[in-house]
Length: 203
Image (cartoon, rainbow, N blue to C red; front, side):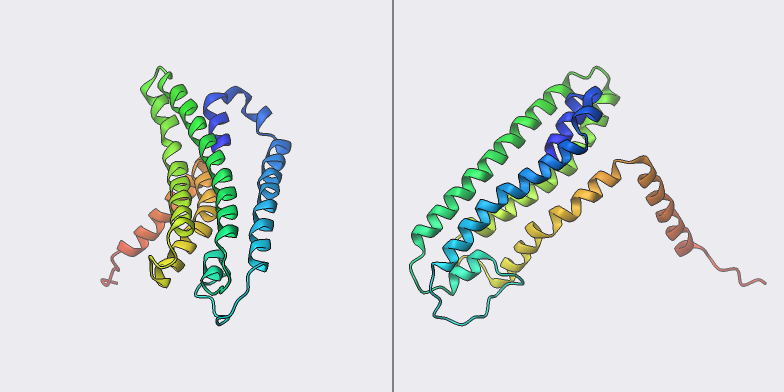
């Protein structure tokens, strides 16, 4: 998402050439491939544990911190390895995002017209909101002590970082298209018109 934004603002004349089907496939494949070692390390760490408590997990999916709560063997070393690897991946992604947005803001500030700067800047806040939501909730979920929050808060945070960002991506990209904006405006106006329409009882 950030790379798409970077190319659209910093290299707009080459956008069609750079962001072709092959580039999109490569980016999706790199995201999937980078997830393989992460899931392998986490799964291997969980299989190395012994569980002596109940089998009820206080979550709507088997999240690693929830499984660690019901483990009775010492998982400190495994947690350190997994956390270190996730921090390494996360910090690399975060650094890429920061560098990309620094380049985006430098390019936008060099745009001579105020209208052009406003148009370019207006595409940035939705991306930054989704990224911030993902990072903040993910950090809260995985780096907080096990006993520092209620199970209800854990479920809410898990929903925020696992469901909301993927749902927001197509919304953000759709709202950039004039046709979608026009259709949404027309639908909203029709709903409001029908709601506020006063019936005529004189007939």
